[in-house]
Length: 240
Image (cartoon, rainbow, N blue to C red; front, side, top):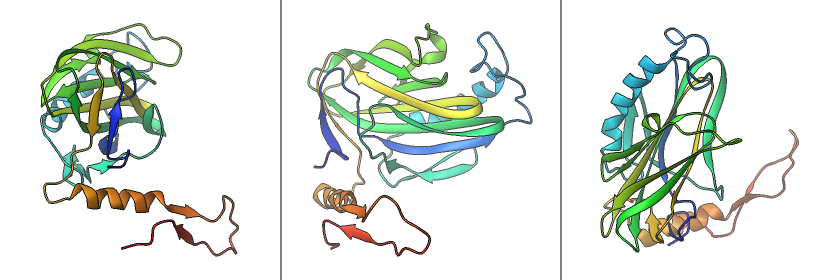
């Protein structure tokens, strides 16, 4: 299958591919005012609201979604979709003039070469709260493990076991500020693994891989266009 759907991940490399639900953005300026605790260490602004946000997120972290499945969070809905691209650090965000919540949920399936207790590294850019769940159980919450920030990244190291065979690994990301941006990189440090996104029960892997080949073949004729230009797509693989 294509790398966008399944790949062999060596120890210490970024765990991917992922499905994402979101990102979701919510205006919280009516109850969260001033610099939040994500922006100012020691502040309490936003902490009470974040407790509510995380509580509502637990149901999503406990689930085992597949691509295309619908999900909802705090009154907003979306579908679990494939994260494409070569990036080694994944991020999403917007800037607002008032405090907004940014939230994103990601999930994938990990089959480790070495099941059992494993060592992980989670890298986070802008200060944010991240939760990691394995098979529906939260195994790590950055809020409970404050660490020193180094340059542009915060590095969290933790231990969490993987069962033999398939494991559903999920990540939830939250930040509350004017810069409503979340991002992460998750690494499995002491075992190689096969990582794949969960497809629907009625989806044939070979057909789904064919879709990815067609998507990868879509390109524009050049990089720069003017208003009077006609724009068309070139397909490397003819549509079925």
